[in-house]
Image 1: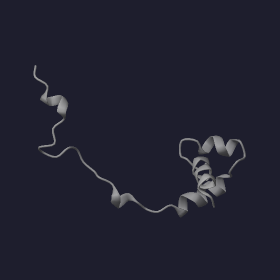
Image 2 (image 1 turned 180 degrees about the vertical axis):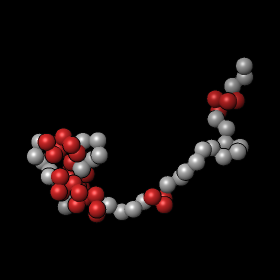
Image 3 (image 1 turned 30 degrees about the horizontal axis):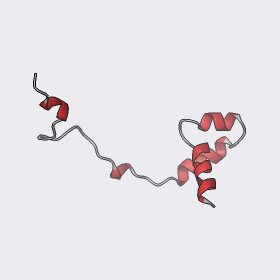
Image 4 (image 1 turned 60 degrees about the vertical axis):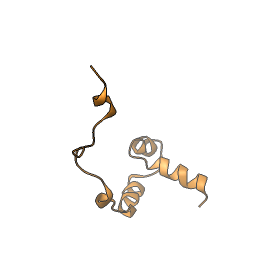
Length: 64
């Protein structure tokens, strides 16, 4: 699959636009479910929590 075709395929299954793609008949709900099952689990790669101590915003450094 070419890079352009792959990008188009990803847009069809994008969470924000997949309902529109299904309504237009570009993909089926079954295709979408198959796509979701094929995705890699990346839950462990995320960064969770708030800022750590010492991580101050530059906006906090503005003199009042």
